[in-house]
Image (cartoon, rainbow, N blue to C red; front, side):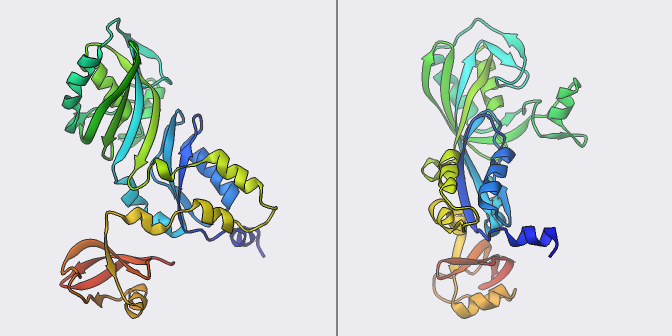
Length: 314
């Protein structure tokens, strides 16, 4: 047996979500690598990158759950972040160089008075140190090479923005619930500018991504400790049972259609089925069919017929 086949044979068929509480100081890919070495999954990916200096909710998809990653990434996100007043950096966080300073320190009332201007659909210029592509190159690569980077403002959705508290006159802690594509670093930068001062993010924690929140998070050290208690080569079934959430947990916002065992078999073969029952929709752009609580396929409904577009192998 070839080494490649042997390596694939030794991988575990894990299907579901692990919501990691990413620790400070490592990249999202570093965290993913650690999970690979613990669980040896056949297939894995994450839903939404966190910067090394950020902590919190990093949903990891295993196996068939990778098919639901786009729905999680498109969901709302909640961030809690600390802004330190008095200095703006070229990265809008602690990693960059100071490019502007101010002695002005906004009061609690002043901060609260402007937050409404940053809620709803607003225009935001992303940080120059971001993964946005400019003429085929990443903006952060161009910025690191010393090139001038000009990014256009683009619409983002900020559903909620509130002041959590002010530890002292130099810092404010805020919480934002926002849509896809929002840069919290840029939000902090723009709030500071609106308050006639400078500011940058000094702490950032993600509390929610789509359907996954703090109550779902698992600390990396907890998982490593649990894995360390297993004998070498032992199955990881116990870890999966304790830490992995079902694939369907990512699809809370998608219409579910219950089908019979016979229809589930047809759908798995790519066949359309006629839906029965008063509650069955006549038309639906996106839905998922399930049988006995297990997702069968994504698809659409047209004139009362469910047409699968992507089948789950569960």
